[in-house]
Image 1 (cartoon, rainbow over the protein chains, first blue to last red):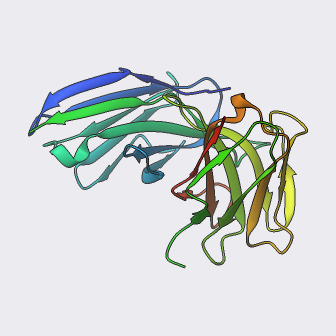
Image 2 (image 1 turned 90 degrees about the vertical axis):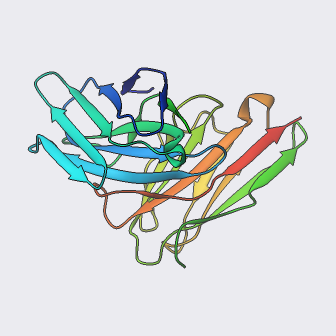
Amino acid sequence: SQQGEEDPQALSIQEGENATMNCSYKTSINNLQWYRQNSGRGLVHLILIRSNEREKHSGRLRVTLDTSKKSSSLLITASRAADTASYFCATVPSGAGSYQLTFGKGTKLSVIP
Amino acid sequence: GAGVSQSPRYKVAKRGQDVALRCDPISGHVSLFWYQQALGQGPEFLTYFQNEAQLDKSGLPSDRFFAERPEGSVSTLKIQRTQQEDSAVYLCASSFDRVTEAFFGQGTRLTVV
């Protein structure tokens, strides 16, 4: 079963614009991770945010986490055509089973040059 | 090696045939995961190894699926008597420990005809 739900399912923007994707989850977490998947390829880890963190930055990426609302957002600033991919959030639960990454269905981002 | 390596990249199997999918994790990574990804969906957890011990196989769809990691390094996912519903991309991932970022291979795309 998939815990995370990304929103929107698909997003199309112009190059240079910002892209925001949201993720909601159901259970208590140890951490939440965002991954990117280009068509026909494996997943690439982007950023990990722990349950006691609220915001994290990495280059053009900004992730926020609100554990009270069980939600996270990924912001990609100044998007590029190369950012076109599917983006998945994945959660690692707290407590027992604290290893299993549970993925959402993903947001398909298209950046138009 | 530099990353997680999976072979073969593509496999076409006739229904009823047995298949074996191989995963070479990053050297020194204790944790190894197998995921199944259907078209347009996020990856679904199959099984988890910590070194050679298979600690969780709750995601394996049926007893036709079997995974091993006998020496705590290379892992093999075996599917017996393949069915059409087994068609998917099978992803292997490894991580240094159970809650840090996971590094994914390119996956094996299995098509059962």
